[in-house]
Amino acid sequence: MNQERKGSILVLLGPPGGGKGTQAARLAKDLGWVHLSTGDVLREEVRRGTELGRQVRQIMETGELVSDDILGRIVLDRLAHLDKPGCILDGYPRNLDQAQFLEKAKGDRRLVVVSVEVPEETIVKRLTGRRFCPRCGTVYNVCFSPPQVQDFCDQCGVRLERREDDREDVVRERLRVYRESTLPVVQFYADRPYFRRVDGDGNPEEVYGRLKEAVETLVQ
Image 1 (cartoon, one colour):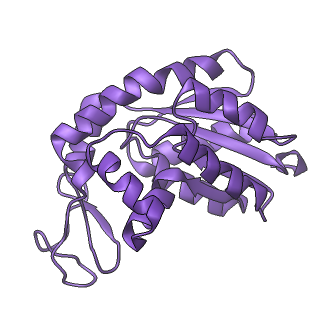
Image 2 (cartoon, helix red, strand yellow):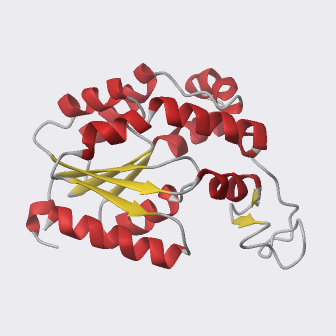
């Protein structure tokens, strides 16, 4: 990749459980960019018990989306303090109003967009099977990457937990909200020259290869 990537913003779109977070973190490390996951920021606020965290806890647990105003303030703040040549936005924008807000907020930075696409039933299986270690944060999946001892972390021996928003009813509600709110964002970008679709069904290495190739094509 060349110096044209400086000042770039990569918008990574896709359904919840589509693997965006894992792939974005790896890609950000490879590029030397910032990985900005609005979901991670909000969960950290909830964990710390901040005023913002208290505001969003109930919203997140029911599978609804946090307000555009809150997310917009987070994105503006992070973009204003970037100390890397680029930023990967993971989880934003999620609706047309946010996409239009980003058009103004990005300033003179170059915008590129990739949509990671995965069948819904695959996502349901991924998310409802997800477990995490409350001590070290290691994530497992009872279907795809289970721990050696059922229900216990390989690293810590601590009993694994499931996020409240990984219950099947919440997962399906999140997917419904995604269909209604975020699929129009994909269409908003779809006919633009800086947009690509990536098949997100497969093992992480295969998906990462497709994603990296798409990004390289966009920023070269």
